[in-house]
Length: 291
Image (cartoon, rainbow, N blue to C red; front, side, top):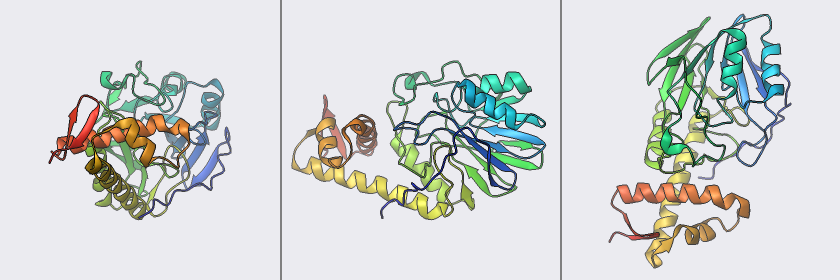
């Protein structure tokens, strides 16, 4: 199953755009090969508002958020995880509005140097939440889902009131998610994708890119993509032991060279998971089949 990536998107960078009833989005001016068009910050609710993934420490973006909620009460800032394109603006938004910053916890030390966007090591939530906790924002009940994989402190937020899910970087419409060891965990990532398949969320609003209107089909394609990558890696190792760079050169031959660095992280994550399941062994930087 090919992943039906969503590439038709007008970010309207810096503008506050209504994307659904009681939901607005402002895209930050930080586009790159990892963030796509930039960080999409969501304003959930009217009158009483939650800011979901406030984004980078960018003066213009923070100003756009505060202008959009000028006559409203910001009760919470919901942070999906502590990469620098998601959480740093939480401090300025909270200072200006008095909002409670919500997150799973501080940036994991094992992830300080493995992120494409670097880590927000100064992040400290006012309210630490874990799987199953509920945050009430006006008329909206927000369920917190702990979804490690991309990073160990990753959360998705499910709006029980509307059926919308804010998956952060766990599911992105425009691209696959980078899973970077040692903190990134491919086995956990795929398990948490499968967990979403058992839910009935009606629409996803990822932090990067457009909304996903058929989320179950889309998530199923992501699971199949990861399973196919496992099969490709095992097929390569069946020929001879391989280094990660050698696998990337073959498996990502049709991908731009600058993307081979994050691709190598994901290949390593697949290998770590395959080694954990007993299918692969390693000798230094070379990997081989276990049988």
